[in-house]
Length: 277
Image (tube, rainbow, N blue to C red; front, side, top):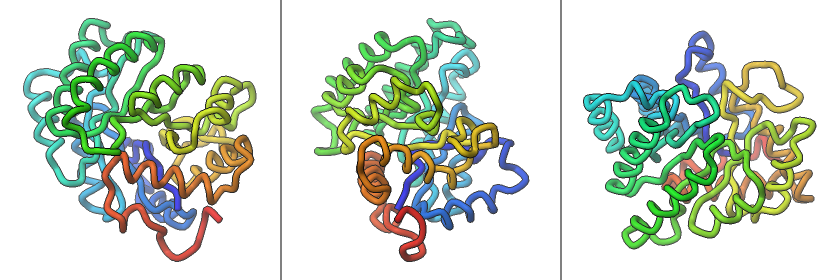
């Protein structure tokens, strides 16, 4: 019972074998896959995949790299797509001052626009933050204080995707209603900061993800990542926490189901007891 909380199966990397990738995921023990949009086109394709498969869900959003290209028509399209029953979050959105592929001013403006849509629709957010940790935290803490009075009880506000910060920052996010997502890079050598987060953060505040096609875990490092490889990440988390893979899989799947409002059937075990045991 594993949920890949963040991947990009709509990307061209999977155009030749997408159905086979999905079949390998189900055979590996995944119950649900969340396909994440990064601009208007990839959000549309994520939703098309979700509408074609029962246990696939979509998110829509504008990645900070794409902020400079989002116009009024694009914002309206994303707002419309967000109302689909198969859309479970706004994202991937946020700030990236490491590469600055869009000017910071435009990143900030689009980030706030996406947060406004999420607040209006009461959808959780999937946050990308790189070289912008303190500003991202300040923006999200203010947004959290605004939306919390109307937020569904016990539902997290969002998730920090592919978290790369210190344990102290992860705990600060957990305190005001965010989850932290652990990618395959936790299996790499010299991942001390991320392994400290895995060991110190309560499992109830954690998700796991592939970010496929990127960040393939060991022993698949260097290959195209895919959801079936999530088992390696779950195994490493279990090792670091001295827990079983089943405990990690079931708890993080429950966390994802609560965050994304997944139906019980989508969050449950597929095809008996295969995988994750």
